Image 1 (cartoon, one colour):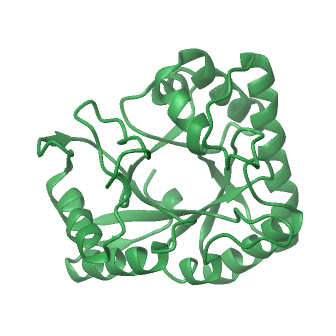
Image 2 (cartoon, rainbow, N blue to C red):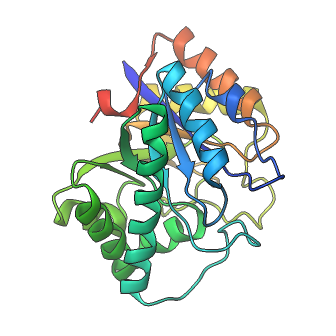
Image 3 (cartoon, rainbow, N blue to C red):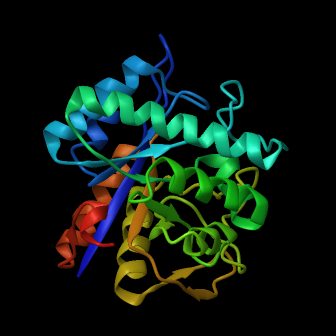
Length: 254
């Protein structure tokens, strides 16, 4: 069996460091690089991309709302056209910085509240899919399965990668448990590792209620801004490889 592990990285800004990017790039096989809206700046982007290239980690754009203060986790209502251009702008930004590292951008994954809203709003989903198709229709659209964003990506003929989350709990409708609820973020490395192996080997995710949700996915995500991210990612990597699962970059799976 093969699976991808990805992490959301490059989310610091200026003098502020967020996440242990260099350590995570020793573990994960793909990186979603913040493009300057919810986090990230040219210097941080370049540094992350240089390390990723050195370590053979595939990279993608991680566009979000223009919301540094809220880290892109506040819902913003905007015109779909404006959202489309905002996403296209961010994809272009990472492509420019990737040239410094001599690395190709391979995928796009929406961040935070933008991702959550695009999962249920068809207009937001179509805006993101249109931006990807317009900028580079060879980019993989990394989405949560069964969502409006997956449907829009299919509609526009994009290559799709499907992801699940190592460090988040799920509700019975396949949505992530809201962060405001206690226990929605899994910080225990051993628990995360057990869940990761169960998810890959059984092809399903146990929801918070205990119900097992059948779901197809190519990639498992770790949130790089969590203080426990390195320990969680390492535990999951070790458990998966110990179970005979090979960890590979996203383009090798889709």
